[in-house]
Amino acid sequence: METDGRRDSHSSGNPDQVRVRHVDLDLAIDFGRKELRGTAAIRFERRTGSPPDAPLVLDAKGLTIEEVTASTGGGKPARVEGVEEIPGDPIRGGSLRVPLAAGVDLVSVRYRTSPSAGALQWLDPSRTAGGRHPFLFTQSEAIQARTWIPLQDSPGVRITYSARIRVPEGLTAVMAADRKPSGGDPTVFEFAMDRPIPSYLIALAVGDLAFRPLGPRTGVWAEPSVVEKAAFEFADTEAMIAATERRFGPYRWGRYDLLVLPPSFPFGGMENPKLTFATPTILAGDRSLVALVAHELAHSWSGNLVTNATWRDFWLNEGFTVYIERRIVEDVYGVERAKIEAVLGLRELRDDLARLPERDQVLHIDLDGRDPDEGMTQVAYEKGALFLTELERAFGRTRFDAFLLDYFNRHAFQSITTGDFLADLKARLFATDPDAAAKIDLAAWVESPGLKAPFVEPTSDRLVLVEKAAADWSTGRTPADRLATGEWSTQEWLHFLRALPEKLPVDRLGELDTAFGLTGRENAEIAALWLLMAVRNGYRPADARLEAFLTSIGRRKFLIPIYRELIRTPDGLARARAIYARARPFYHPIAVESVDRLLAGR
Ligand code: BES
Ligand code: ZN
Image (cartoon, rainbow, N blue to C red; front, side, top):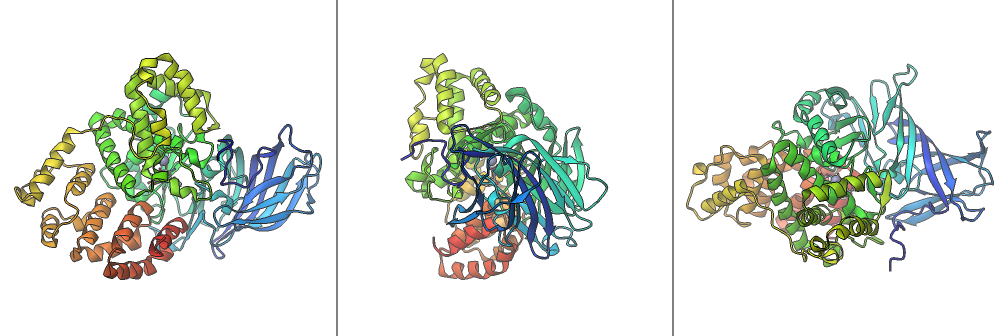
């Protein structure tokens, strides 16, 4: 079926004929109407061999196009006649076909976004930490950039961009780009990204934001009441960058800052270049959830520097990134903590494999005609990372690290396919050591469902003790208040809870709750898992906490399993509907889409 691994079935653009190279944005933010308004001025390149009358075709989803102009060599812009807005399907959205007269080298689109744009979340002041100012943020990955910018929205197309953003008085705009001085007007912010990036990495946030430096090239943005806590949590960021550079080459993006978003941010983190976006649910107060920072930072190499060319190559982004994340955790926090993360990750992979159809269990997944979000499972993340871990084992760390360093250098600022990676692997690693290569079954790893290739199960001594504690309590040998949990980390608690029997009587859950105050835990990871167990077993003392959790946190990874568990019983379904009716306006469009689908039984 696949003829060219480079063809992106999720974009309507024509980069093989006319390829976008630079976008200059001039946008005003209108919180009242929930819209962005302005222009996108697009520079492009006609590819050799393409027909002389080839148009420029852009993705545009839900945009209101007001006018399209074109100019030649810096000349006067003239309105373009014959522009076509082509309706598309619900997943890809539409496209904009702009005829190009000979010599035209700049096309400017004046447009407005829709209030329901999938990339944008508009928050009323009541949904922010400060409660006094509205907040806006974008989430462009995977294919949402087209809902706020007309462009060729494919990870195989790399562009530079510049932007001028006008905001209401008193608010600050940040973008995943360099900040430029903007001529004294405090309501205008200017940015430039001068390294070629895929469109899914274009990002903007506007709100009441404060900044705290962490190190010479690192810092954190957040609402003023959150920024100190965030600065404490992220204190190891510079050490993480240094560790990654030591192994995988220089950090090539200049600054590395983090932005802590309001709690409705639908993901844990998003690797927007120079400015990782993060959920406030990782601010645990004890730095126990900062593997997420290591993850998003690792994307500065795997993902942002070397990018998946299409969404079926998503595992190249995420599998590599989980592998590097664990290497960073090992260097900064020690080998035991890295092993713990690997054990927890494999557990989550097995949970996903148990519910996914076979076609979704392969790394090189077929996503044609589907939302790329459907490939966002632990298969891409953990099976991908496990594959790389086995390569490391077969060839030895020294040689595998050298291969990776060389891979990042040679493909820096390129978008590549699974086929490109495999060709590299064979030519540059397998060819050097046929005996090691013979241990790796590439087809089993890349094209087969499940876990068919042999691998070494990750283990952790500390988690073995946790499993023993879980068994001692489950079999009734040791009461909860006698378990030696005193020094347990967040990860050990998570492993403990997962090691308990799925079905437990409510009085047994009550015993745990009394001993360990689980319903009252502030740590969002522990709370989410405990609430899942409470729902599964009908433990009602957690009801109020459940409602508070689901109406105050919009991170999809927490919401989906809990709603999925709730709707398994008629009573739970009714509660899910009642809670969701209140929570829905607070969730991000991406989370709304997922919960809607779940509640509709799709
Ligand atoms: N790039 C992803 C987030 C993403 C993937 C957004 C696909 C939209 C489509 C990001 O790097 C990520 O993987 N985030 C994880 C956290 C991480 C520690 C595994 C998340 O948000 O859960
Ligand atoms: Zn990631």
